[in-house]
Image 1 (cartoon, rainbow, N blue to C red):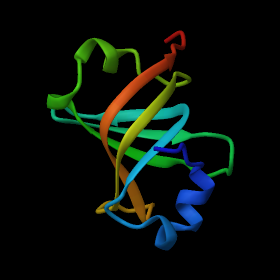
Image 2 (cartoon, helix red, strand yellow):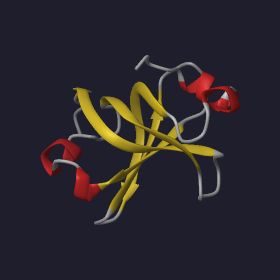
Image 3 (cartoon, helix red, strand yellow):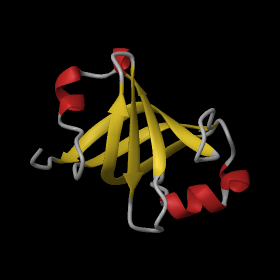
Image 4 (cartoon, rainbow, N blue to C red):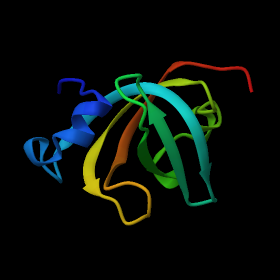
Amino acid sequence: MAKLRIYNILNETDTIGIGNQVKIQGWVRTRRGNNAVAFIALNDGSCIHNLQVVADLNHFDEAILKKVTTGACIEVNGKLVESMGKGQTVEIQAEQIKLLGEADP
């Protein structure tokens, strides 16, 4: 699976297709959530907008997710879906998160 840029995902959603698998890399701008799900705002520098990544905490190693802090560099593989929240039209339902670089908390 080829890596996509956030700019392309946000501007070419019809071409990429809702429900298709995507891979992105970028830096964590923010991370919030609760005991069940994490919402990660990811930016790769291709545009000023972030892409929201939704991670079900039951599917990921807690030790890795604790290192996903502001400034960390990650790679996400997942499904592109329509967003149910306000502020964005699409988001990624994460299926795999790989930590590429940590950031000091």
